Length: 138
Image (cartoon, rainbow, N blue to C red; front, side, top):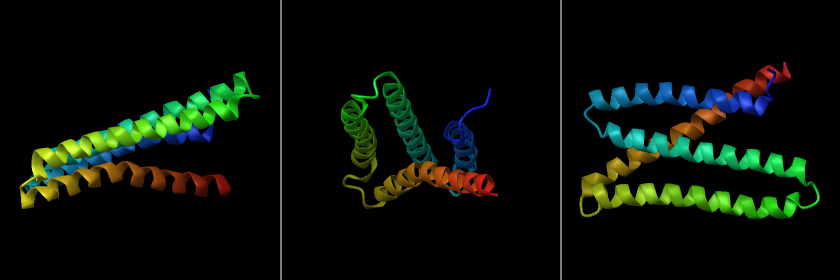
């Protein structure tokens, strides 16, 4: 089965993120930091990445089925997807804030570590895109 480049990249991002997250979580655990919040951030990032892929596939399917109305429906779906991903992100990070950082000056590090986990998914995605772009152009 020959898959498009975007699907191959999407399939690679998740396991690479798991490997990077496991290594970083072990390092944080050895350093006696809040490694569990790092994993919460990584899983939130992976959830948002999956939601983004789901909405992207929905756009492609709409464009194939009804090309005349696809742009109108796609705008609505894009805003709904963005809102849903933003709500997931805010819900998780507000919960971490009220659990660890509210009233605790040292608890802000848990929030920073969780954001680092969330950014790990974005970092891996950018690295995989750069690697594939180089292979495609050569």
